Image 1 (tube, rainbow, N blue to C red):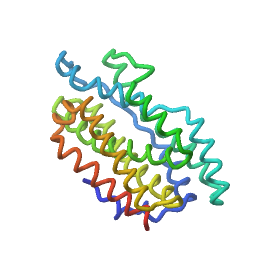
Image 2: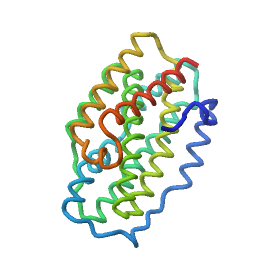
Image 3: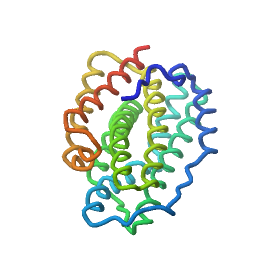
Length: 243
């Protein structure tokens, strides 16, 4: 588990986040497929259901989120926040494109809708900026654990492209958790909010494991290790919110 609390990002203001995201935007991942293995049917069935789902989940037009971000920027007098979120959405869409390129290389079709993703998008829109960011940071915590597991699977499959993609995802998602926690710190954060976030994490963990537990387990996590990792990051996020 990464220690989020000791990184330089925990002290960032939105102006610093904007500069960070702009700099990262100049350093996009170049994926080398020249040494990719031929995957057999069982290997494809292991990795591509979850990759397909996460590829869809990473993609967003961000219309509702940007609308809420604009209101947040005005309410809390944070003029850089809207631009920060534009770069955040751009970064998430690059994540989606990395996974799409991996799927395209192996001739795996993209999906326009994943039921679990559809449900979470509806929850995100239910309570303004609070639900948007709470669901986002939950998804990013799950992603941090998932990409750790998927990267381990990539090494077992001798897939340098998948390993490289997962490393990029881990680099970016770690920062995203800290960014979203900083935003939640502007909002209400009492015991009811903490309980809501724990409830959300519990149910998301169960749903993701039920759908993709086979690849997560292959990547080195039992269900309880997966849950503990997710809740460990959640506790760090809650600590950041209260700072």
